Length: 297
Image (cartoon, rainbow, N blue to C red):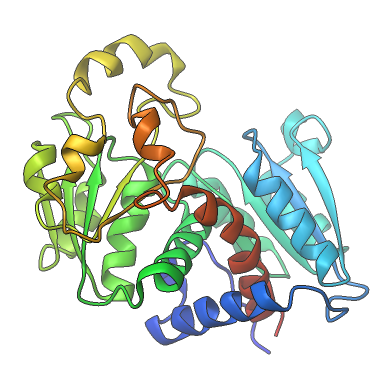
């Protein structure tokens, strides 16, 4: 089988992504097997994580394999070894690698020199594994997302960029509300202008939406900008009042961690009639197991 990487949603066809979602739902119902017996995953973390580490490590264990946790303190990458050298060495000893890092160019270089599949578990540009979980959750709870309207409210960050790719791959319309100077990557917005609306008004973005999504206003590595960001994002909280502008059966998602009273109200995130956040978090496990199966053949 030809080696495949998963660095963004564009690395799979829409048909393949649909198959991964369907397989994730099936694995959720039947989670334990030995199909990965003898397989080893290397998990490389330059950024801290809760859901990413637990979901990948538990997923490998449930399928009979094992996972190695490698922080920047645990490898020569942290001491300046060239990415290409580490990629060659690590990939010669394991079957699959996930990388959670800062610059997207770093994971692209790592994948270029890896002899095994590489999964993007988050970069500053994209977070495609989270989108697999999000789409899986919507399909489970509301049905097909094709033809629906999704609203993104908040920072034009890696999640927002991945939602733009998801709109293209899963065939939905995306309405984005971001403050000026906090917009998503201009290149991918322009390439998907037929299905992406970009503005600065949360009410306008959410109007009629079937799904409303947000994320933290200050991501990892942006801590020095926190006060500036809090001022810029005033009025961008997703709450019950904002959700009244959405469709009657609209859902809310957040990839977590969430800061109640900032990007989302505590009342909304805990409202089981609207919030799918906890199913979304759990589905990281099942969707990623399906992705690993796909990449390992």
